[in-house]
Picture 1 (cartoon, rainbow, N blue to C red):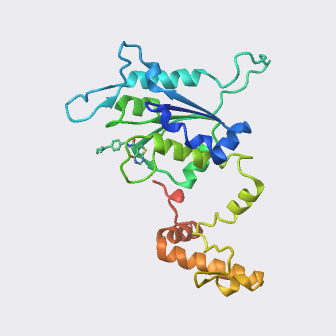
Picture 2: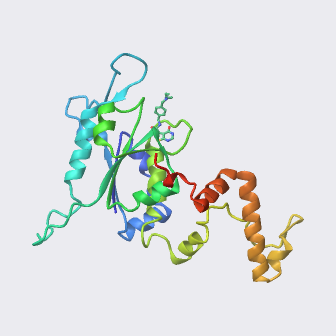
Picture 3: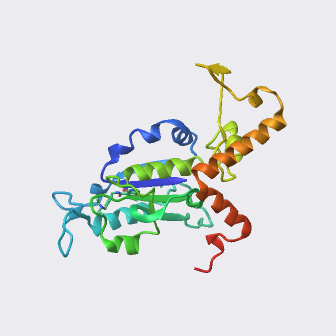
Amino acid sequence: MRIDIVTLFPAMFAGPFDESIVARASKAGIVEIHIHNLRDWTSDRHRTVDDKPFGGGAGMVLKAEPLFKAIEALKESSGVPLDATPSATPSAAPSEQVVLLTPQGERLEQKIVAELAQQERLILVCGHYEGVDERFREHGVDREISIGDYVLSGGELPAAVLVDAIVRLLPGALGSAESALDESHTDGLLEYPHYTRPAEFRGWRVPDVLLSGHHGEVERWRRQQALDRTKRRRPDLLEKAAATITGDSPENSEG
Ligand code: 9D3
């Protein structure tokens, strides 16, 4: 997968992609991430990316022109090296989506992450200031995503969150131990409590069942703990799981 990120603050991406799973996946050629400065697609002397809102009001709005120029240029770069041997049957255009990170987008959840992980190319556009010109949102963007109902100063951290969530789903990105662990945790429940040595720390003991060596009992205890914990902390997750089972989930609605 190739991911292009368009931002006014490229330096914000220096850290997150140089560590852990994303860094490993980049080195292994599983993902190719390119960061671009939106100012590179301006043509005036001051490299202007924003302007005052029509109709008045506080804040600035990202101009449509640099945003369109950016995504058009990135779409044109096919991802195929310029010196590639021409083939008799030109391959189909890679599937790609332009995603705008914005507080007005649909709230990110694992299902959306999984959908985006199917694309061959993603172009992520980080909003900033009061937002982007509506004509870019309407005619230049395939999908709008928020990472939750809290106010951040821009779309950069949300873009980094999205990339992290996507990359770990790409084939080969996780080690075999990590993927096995991951599969057992896709039942929609919160995790059971984890302990490691010592068996007693400052007088706090590890539950006896975990030291018992009875694998069946350990499994039963963990399942019960996961259920109790989910019921108490995240009843919404249980309702969602129940709705999926009864066929009463939003994916089956006509809306
Ligand atoms: C305080 C300004 N707000 C006025 C109602 C609007 C606003 C505009 C731009 C609020 C935040 C931002 C910058 N945030 C993002 O671009 C953003 C974001 C977020 O703030 N929270 C969760 N997900 C995202 S994705 C992009």
